Amino acid sequence: MKYEYAPDLQERMKEIISVLEMNHIDVERVQCLRSFGSSTRRTIARCHTIGKVMQLAMKTKAHYAIEFLELFERMSREEQDKVIIHELMHIPKTFGGGFRQHDFVCDKNVEIMHEMFRSLKRP
Image (cartoon, rainbow, N blue to C red; front, side):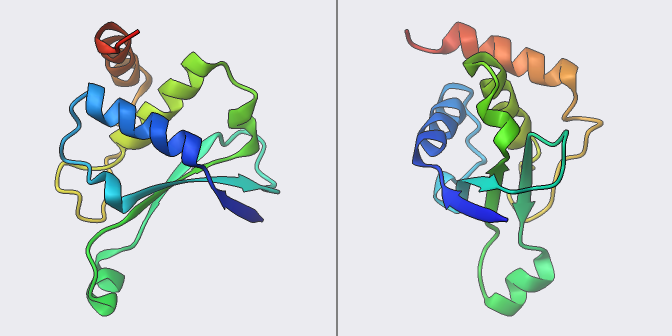
């Protein structure tokens, strides 16, 4: 696996957070990365974090990484926005190193957030 920073996706993520007022997300502690060489065929993106035990051991606060796999690049911009929203929705209001599960981060809720983003986004 190879990873690289994705500054273009970082900016898109920041715009989505701002427009949707996802104020619980500390953008300084979320990093967007592209990955290459995964053997998975269906995964588009993944959200990673440092567990609470490691946070304590490292004397640090929670940090999140959103990994975008090669399949992401072949999607339309609109579908990419939905994927970014989906991954951001996994980050809980506590921003403590946990995740919101797919009972909340589901297609219905992603669609609602995406429609809100589209309606509020500046042209």
